[in-house]
Length: 375
Ligand SMILES: Cc1ncc(COP(=O)(O)O)c(C=O)c1O
Image (tube, rainbow, N blue to C red; front, side, top):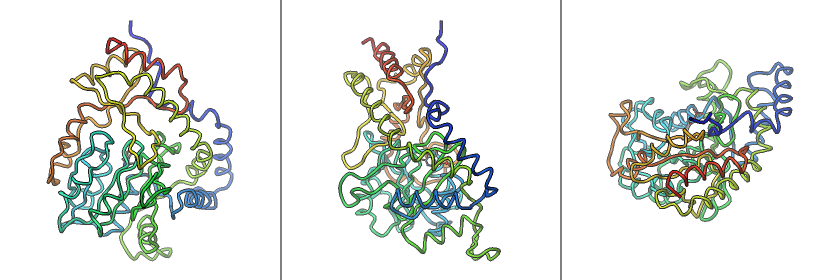
């Protein structure tokens, strides 16, 4: 008989249960304040985030808006090309299409799942106006290598999945994901490394002119109230979400420590399996373990997934179809081989990595995987 599903990818009510009273107090403070858009609570969260990341940050409605606003501030439009990985979430490329520009797909490394600098070099043209470097699954793309290849081209760091990751060495040693590119964009979607209780996002920018321009775009193109210099949109981080995030930031680092313990348990229990590959940690980045994504060989991925499901263990395929093969983006540009991205879409499987998981949960998942492979 099938088991009742017992281990979700992430159990947010359980994650929040340790500090639920603080979340409730923070929400109720906003309710009592009457300031639901903007105000002191939002300002203080933005200030805190700016200090934490050591760069200026403001809140927006979600991570997709953050990317859109960054590209709008860089004046990207029809006739322009923007380099983006073929293997990422749709939002990273959707914003390029929305502005009438062309996405130029690049391949990702089959070990780290992040952009291959050589592939970016082949994709460059005189029309290239930006590179969207996605820090996929929780560790950094090689920004320093991209900077060397494309010296004058602005890099937008899509940091939706890697809030809190840091450069361990090189030119950017000690700096946070999202703080070194011309723009860093963040998503505070609930399951993200720093997640709100609804949608939320942020934009980091060290260039004062571009920071002001992006902020104005997010406020209907206004610098002053009712004076619209440029065409903008409406994108704000709700005050209530800022209050929630302010509480969650206090627990962020300890959640990272717990996720690192869980990943160690996975490594220990699964390292001898020849039919899968465990995620590779690159030497220049810390990892915030947004996902623990393995590769499963010999067309076994979907069968393993079904077996786990039957044992009550959730897993997810991020991402089953690469972006160049999505009908929505059929008219974009493919200038380099995307063979790794294509292979990964058939091999990747993300396992639960939730700071509130028990050791028993992790052991049960590993036991199920070992059993599947007859170990
Ligand atoms: C890599 C990446 N970029 C951008 C986004 C968009 O973020 P949001 O859902 O907050 O719009 C996501 C969210 O899933 C993402 O994973």
